[in-house]
Image (cartoon, rainbow, N blue to C red; front, top):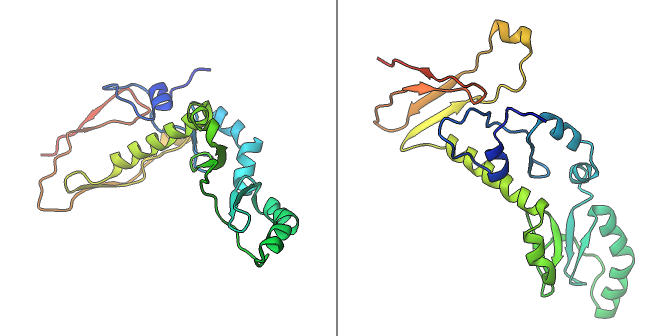
Length: 210
C-alpha cells in the first residue's frame, strides 16, 4: 500500500535523509508503543486484542512479594491469584494474605520487559530482545525521543505551538488552516528564521526576516 509517510522514520525511528520528501508525523499508538506506516494500519490496530487489552489494563503484569512470583492478566488474574495459590502460600509462611500488587520486576529466573510489559524467562531473554514486536517498540521510543529532541530548546531557542494538522478535508484546505507557532529566544540571543517546510509537502518556504 502506497504511503506518503517516511519509511525510514518508520523502520529506524528517525530520518537521516536530507530534504526527505516524505511526511514524518507517523500514526502512532501511545498505549501500545507502536508506529504505523499508514492510517489504515493504525485504525485496524485499534480493534485488535493487543490494543484492547492495553486499554483495559488486562495485560498488566503484577508482582506478589509474598509468593515471589509475577502475575500476568491484570486485576482479574491478580484477584484469582489472591483467592487461590496466594492464600495457601501466605498461610504456609505465616504471612498475611492481605497484600497489594506491586509493579512487576525481574527475579532470579525471569526478566521484566518494560517496553512490552511482559515477563520473560531469562533463558529466552536474548530471543525476546530480537523479536519483531520488541524491536518495533524500541523504534517507537527512538522516534518519540527524536520528536522531543526536535521540539526541545536549542541553545536558548524555544519552539512552541501546534505542529500536527491531522487529516484536512478538501473543503477545509481551500479555506486554509492556521496554527500559531512561536519561536522565542529565552536568553539575549538573536533569532533569525530562514525557512520552514511542512513535512507533508515537497516545497520549502523561504522567509525574509528583515
